[in-house]
Image 1 (cartoon, rainbow, N blue to C red):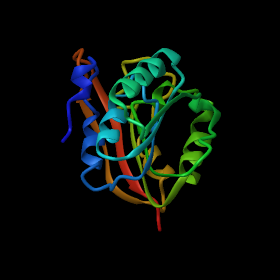
Image 2: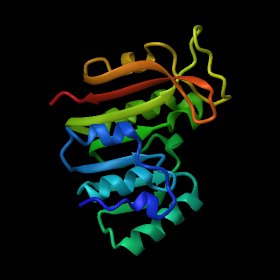
Image 3: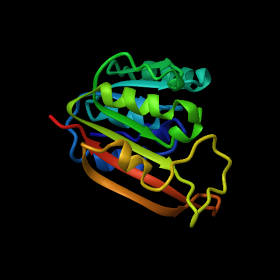
Image 4: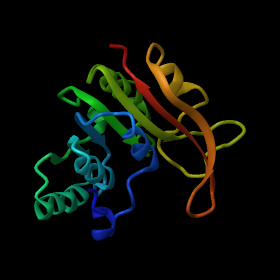
Length: 188
């Protein structure tokens, strides 16, 4: 049974795309890139995934570490890691990167995506949700990086796209923002 740890610790619920992905992905070694305080890592951990949760924010990692200890969740490891280094260091069956890429150095995006490809096991999955900026929908938020139309699809050429869209949504503050959402499976 899943206890709502996120509510217990004042965190947002797990990202809806992570929840959806878990309906088809079996528990495996998983990376939560840009985990922040751990909303997705905690959800995945409760489902039996072995989660490596990384973020550059040491305060967020400290918060997640204290929850892991309090809840005795030995299947989640939280560590400070700069995603910009494009060196994930080990292989995973599932890499989740939701609303993270837009905060990285644009010069590192190709290397980061290439490292995600390399570090995904054959038959494994990548989930990416990232803000876009297009002619029709220029991004109203000054993120360091935004995807262009079709850019994420091109980056995953040769993978099975289980879900892919570039939809406009409304943020909690009312701003209209276009996001690329992709769940892709690496060829086995």
